[in-house]
Structures are given as structure tokens and as C-alpha cells.
Image (cartoon, rainbow, N blue to C red):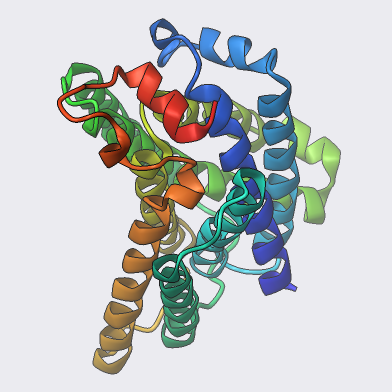
Length: 306
């Protein structure tokens, strides 16, 4: 059930990323990193449909986390790229290229090898409060530092990458809070959940993560933000799982060697798929007339079909 729920969650996250990027890339640049961006996007039907897909994915992810550790569930969510590719191919009426098929196979093989080599195991369910404080401070300082870097950079290519990384780190802590909230709900009931702090921290941090990821989508083409978001989130979530919940993965030399090979396959798959014209809806920079630069909003619109 953990695998089924995790893959189902990945499907809806893939659908959400495709729908949301189409709308966020066309949003006014002045709204970047402001909650007014979310208010603007709420008026867009396609973005609202993406949020509905996100909600479905969130519920499925919570169900998976109630049955398995973060170090197992989060790598499964990288399969969302495969679903995003297939959905984009249908929506854009494009044919999936041989290079993209190769990336799909590499991603699937890497995920399979990684989960087999790690043999992830559940840790403790109750996390001491001081660990939450340490983890929260670390995530906050890291994310704020990356956001500050993104605000100061003059590179239109770096900004969506940095905001995607900041969103991924924020979502790593959100995933940990979701796991604890689901555990409280399933063992002690809804009243205990409402009386505690997990739910409210989850909602607040989730809103921050949503703003960061939409700002990343707005800042540039999906081929820049999506690989960063997809690659960093499972790594950060697995680290949070080990640190907060004492979850276990194999770390003997043979396992580490296999995990390295698996990571290389996954990174290759994420990189190729995240830059795929089929997924991003683009035709590549070479399509622009020679010597003619495109503005960022025009380039976003061209690459997303907006």
C-alpha cells in the first residue's frame, strides 16, 4: 500500500505542476514572493484545478506516510516527473522523444535500485520538541538565505532554480509535520490534532512552500525550477526523516555503492525530463530568431504554450 499510495500521490503532483506552471508563468512579475501572487492565481481556473490535484496528492502522501517512513515515501514522489511528461505530451499533442524515454527508464531503474539498496525502515513516531526547534531553525535559516540570494541575483536562469531549492527544503519540513499530524490523527483522534501544534505549523509552512514554488514557476521556464524542486525535496526529506524520526537506511559499503549508482541514474532522469520540451511546453531557445532576445514573460509564454 505504501508504494501504491506513493505512486498515486506522484501522479497528482505531476498533474498539479503542469497545470500550475501554465498559469504562474503568466502572472505579473511584481507579485513574485508576495501572497498577492496566490490571490491572483486563485482566479485562474487551471491553477485552481492544479490546487485540487495538489490536495489529492497531499491526502495520498499523508496516507503513505502513515504506513511508511519518509525515506521510502519521498523518493517515490520523483515519479511525478514521469506522469508530468505523459500529461504534457497529451495536452501539448507532442510525441515523446527517444531521449525522454531513456530518461524515464533511467529514473525508474534508479528509484528501484535506490529503494532496494537502502532497505528503508521506520523509526520512532514521537519526536522530542527540541528536535523540532533545531530542525525548524535550520530549515528557516537555509530557506531564507536561498530566497535572499534569489532576490539579489540578476540571472534569470538562477532565480527559478534557487526558489525551487528553497521550496524543496521547506516542503521537506512540511512532509515531516504531515507525518506527525497523520500519526496523531490516527492514534488519538481529531480533537487531539486540533489541540496540538502540528496542524497549524503544517498549514503555515505549507502556505510558505506554496508561495515559493509558485514564485519559482513564475520566475522562469519549468525546465529550470522543476529539476531543482524534484531532486532536492526527496534528499532533504530523507535527511529530515533520519534526523527527526531516526529512520534507517543501509550504510554499508556495498549499499552505498549501489545508492551512488542509483542516485546518478535518478539525477540523469530528473535533469533530462525536467528540461524536456514535451514537459515544459517549449521549443527550445534555438527557435528564437538569431540575434533577437526574448523578454522573460514572452519566453515563459512561448515555452508553456500560454
